Length: 209
Length: 227
Image 1 (cartoon, rainbow over the protein chains, first blue to last red):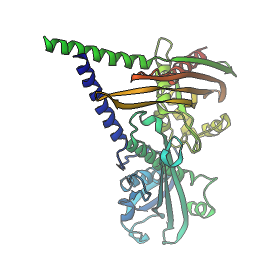
Image 2 (image 1 turned 180 degrees about the horizontal axis):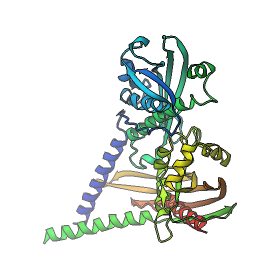
Image 3 (image 1 turned 90 degrees about the horizontal axis):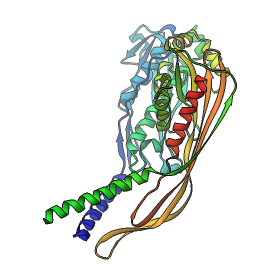
Image 4 (image 1 turned 45 degrees about the vertical axis):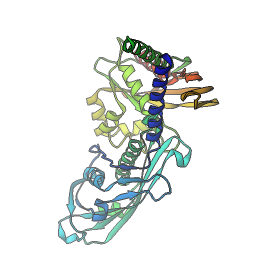
């Protein structure tokens, strides 16, 4: 009788372990970040600027090109958070434009952001404890006549420690989501920082005058 | 009658599993503390402390769970201090305390605090001290192994011995926002051996170094600030 119950329990434990192991080996993940970026505590420039989100940016989905469990990150829906927060905080008025044509609205300049590249590194890639996401943006600033004033190259970087996402069943999808949200927030910070007096290029300083 | 026996033995097995789980919580941990004081401290009834994670773009950062633990334990108890969490603080001061541009020394803080918007926000929230937490928990010297297999009679069984040394090393640097000075540095270091002997059933004895370091550092922070 005792042996029967012992076997019964052992079978249950084995089944549970197998389930946990299979869960851990589940391949890939679809990550849908939902970043929240606060209003920045900064002084604004007394200007009205426009921002043009291309369809490519609004619908940007990154698909992992590496030979490993496939990860997919939906980035497009988060872009307005990144730029509305940073540029909305930097300038008195931010207008969303449907076209890059400067005559379409009365603005002092137009920002045109694009995602050039995304890199994801997992602990399996690096041997370290971090999930890391790097989002490479190019941001073009055009004056009211449509001429390019400056083009920034900005790398938003986010990382999280794998130990914050479970020790037995690592929640990979949650970890990548958090690292992506950190990268988006970092990009927003970098945009604000690139307008500080010590960082901004001369052409941008002249335009701000 | 048979059914009664089944439930009795089943309850016994459940108790064994539960007991094993409880034993796993235990562990042999040794904790040491250090304190370096640079100035006197004290806190008013309407003032609060910000518990912040020192983050760097390169290298390891402290676990979020540890920062949450410090914030929770510092605010609890009869000698508890009002605390603003890391996330609430960095949101309230966005973008000045983001990992990329956060002040790394007291001179940087002085520079930032010249901005009236930041000064007013610090005053309105009643923030007196910033406590920067740095450090991590690592696993070292892992030895042995536990092998599990199905043996005679289709019974799965595990045999072997696994051990490792866990080290939780954390420090807290305390800045006084009112006087714009660094007032001291505290540290807690917990070390312990964890081991898993397995004779049919593996029984883990896990050294809870991180929670010990958290409790120790939180107590130090409270004593240090209220001194």
